[in-house]
Length: 181
Image (tube, rainbow, N blue to C red; front, side, top):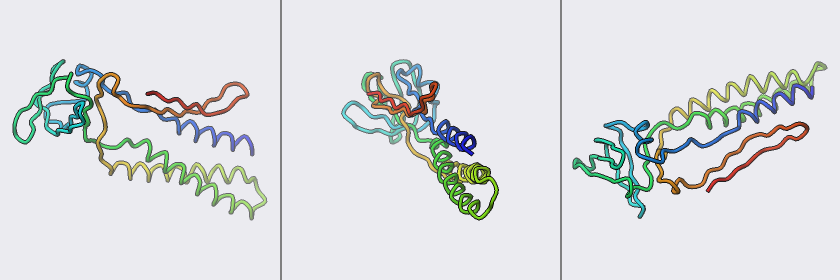
């Protein structure tokens, strides 16, 4: 019973390891993420936001069509660039997995309480089955969400980043949390 419970906890902790996506720090790196016709939101150092469609991108300048007129932005003037796109499916899957797994565990514990058989087997099946169903539902909901995400940040303006990951070394178990500013 303890062995199955440890495996289930390990799977959930490993799946919960998340780290933010790296950002483009130069216009050369941005070329991989942007193509002509994409709609971008440019934010300058003063916080002014300008939305437009990409005309061209060089190593030092970005040309957008803003309200039907061409406008050029130099890399030195831009703080961040956002692009509208699909939300990451990972967080929806993780939330669905946690909710479904919790419901499955609770239901199977209640069902197993009336049986004389191995309770751990019931709980493991419930967590895996309902967790999988919950992950699928969470992924489906996340696929419907569209939002803005930062794809470029001038070096030093990327903001803070939090990373959470499980840690297993020898007899020690824990969670590693790192902050970057």
